[in-house]
Image 1 (cartoon, rainbow, N blue to C red):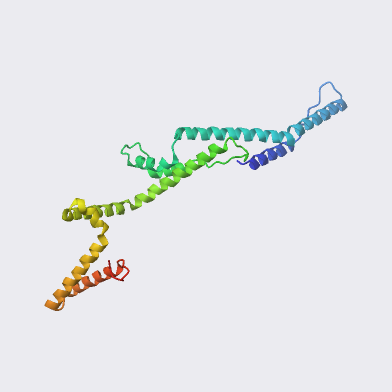
Image 2 (tube, rainbow, N blue to C red):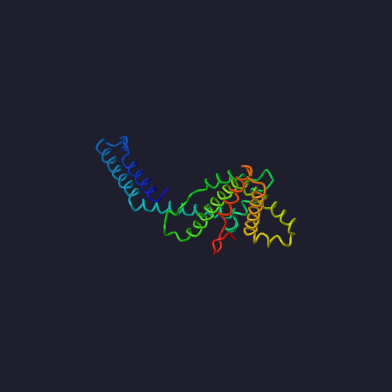
Length: 248
């Protein structure tokens, strides 16, 4: 609850109690009715004065001050407990630790979805008294850690969606690298990939030249081969061009 909510609750309770029916004191045995009435009136007046003093604005403020103090102490204790359980974990390492958590084979490891749910359930807290300088650093660290955990857990979940495609691309790259090393040697693979585009362009030009030669010798090409040539030409057009306007 906020300070204003506490203040409204205390004020409403004080008003409710002040409107309770007055206590009807029974006649005092041994006193005449007039004296008994005078005594009852005096006691009721004293009770009204005491009630007014107890529920005065000054006392309400004192009660609110105690509530705020206890609330702040409870908040600091709770945050300190959370930070103690978490430990001195650098936020930049949260992501790698979550990945390690996911890769564990032990059935005791929590799932990423459960972790996200637990993070969402962490209390969203703020200082009741904005001038509480003692609790502000701890609160700021707590909120920063909560946001870091949630953000990195979400990032890991999103990354898992793309993992199969990334693994497929990785396998394709590994196969290509192995093929290049088989043909050109492992020591020349890096140099080959540095000139990969120009090598592909050179080989495509050579394929076009051979196709042109075959066409002149044998006549028309089958439709499927013509379509293959068109695809090759389209690829050449999409490649970077040098200053002379030619494909590198």
